[in-house]
Each structure stands twice: as structure tokens, then as C-alpha cells.
Length: 137
Image (cartoon, rainbow, N blue to C red; front, side):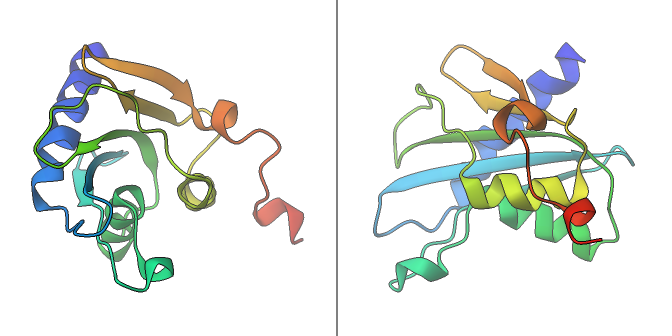
């Protein structure tokens, strides 16, 4: 898995190149690995009406969903100030964690990219006692 996770981390860093972040100045990229083996990339897209901004993770997830994917295995997230190298971790926000929970298991790997590699978590670690489909039945 290390080789795959290293590839995902690099893909997340590259995905930052397409970010649109004129307000915060932070570019974030995500690379989502699906059960099919396909990787979907996403980058953050900001809006002057800040509540309409979409995170890189959700862009990648929504792209995968619109292509028929429903089995998510791992996601890597990389972020930094525009023009700077990734050095500090950018963990997924609460909204992204909740959207991941809709299509993932608590064992889904979350790679938070750092300057030297990545910190590895599971979705269950980042979203303990998460709200989901089971709570609506």
C-alpha cells in the first residue's frame, strides 16, 4: 500500500495546480482512490460568497460519484499557500469528513500530506461516532 499511498500523495500535490483560491490564497488538492483502481482529482474552488466555496476533497468525491463510483478506498489531501511547497498537514474539514462517510467505511484511509510524506488516519479516527444512513432508518 505504501507505493499506492505515495502515488496518491503526489497526485494530491499536483491537483493543487488547478485550485481557484483568490480569497484565502491557499491551494488544496485531493486524490481519491476508488475500488475500481481509478483515481479522481479535485482542487478547492473559492467563491466571493464564502459559503459557496467547495473543498478539494468534495470536488474529487463528486467527480467520482458522477462517474458511477461508490467504493472509496483512500484519499490524500495536500495544501499550502499558493506558490509554496506543502509542509504542514491540511486535514479534511467536517463537511468533507461527513461526505466521505456517506460513501466510505470507517476503515477508509485518509492521507494528510506533509512536507516529508503523509500522516495516515482512518475515517473512523477523524469522524468518531459519525452520523450516517444507519441513523435515519
